[in-house]
Length: 147
Image (cartoon, rainbow, N blue to C red; front, side, top):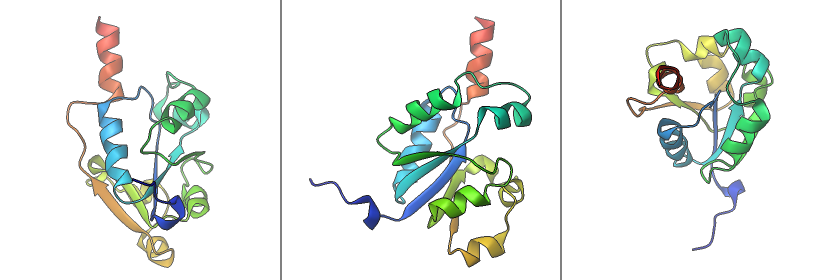
């Protein structure tokens, strides 16, 4: 079967740290790709350290290499705005912003410094995808430290 031209697909924007890639990440990105061509906006090392209070295990370039290697991902960019993701979102011009269901009870839009008006103005639909249970980078780090 011939591969579809990415320009014919809808565009999907998702962002995150994606440190210590695990089955939950893979499942999430695969589900994102069902909506269109996936661009991952990857957090910088400096932002992660400031936001989470610790450095990532893998550097930005290492995480970018890993995520770029996945067949479900079309492009990886740096999250230029850190807390304010609008700059990166507008660069991608997505039809969809896709996030994990763990954000349903949190205010994702507020965290990314945009609101419903921004989504409507830019014709973007926000989609929440169920997370695989029992997988997180924090749990993996904890298991490593305990062993």
